Image (cartoon, rainbow, N blue to C red):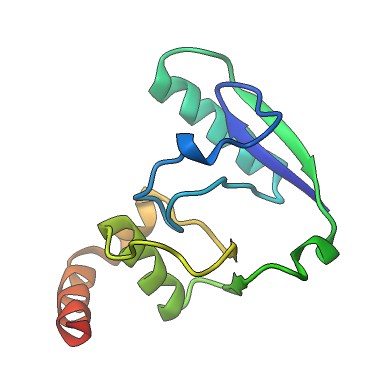
Length: 130
C-alpha cells in the first residue's frame, strides 16, 4: 500500500524524536492513504512553521509488514476512538502499547462540533476512570 506524509520538509527516514506527544494517537510518525489529505497537511504545516515548502513524502508498505507488530485499528470515529484521541491529547497516556494505530485523525472541527456536551461527557468519563 502507498502511504503519504505531508510536511514542510521531505522525509526520507522518519525520526520519532521530532514527534510531538500530545497528538491524536500520541508521539509517532503520521501517514495517510489519502494523497489530498497529505497535501493539505503539508500546506498547513508549512504555514505554521513559516518556512520550507509543502512536500508530500511517499512510503510503500505491505500489509504483511504489520504482522509482527501490535496494531490497534479503529474502523471509524466511535467512542473508543474518541477516548483514545482525548487521552492522548490530554497527556493521560504515558506510553502506548501499540506499535501502530490505524484510524481516522480528528481535526479541530471535530471537537468544535461536539461542543459543550463533549466537555460534560469527558468530565464524567475521566471521573469514572480515576
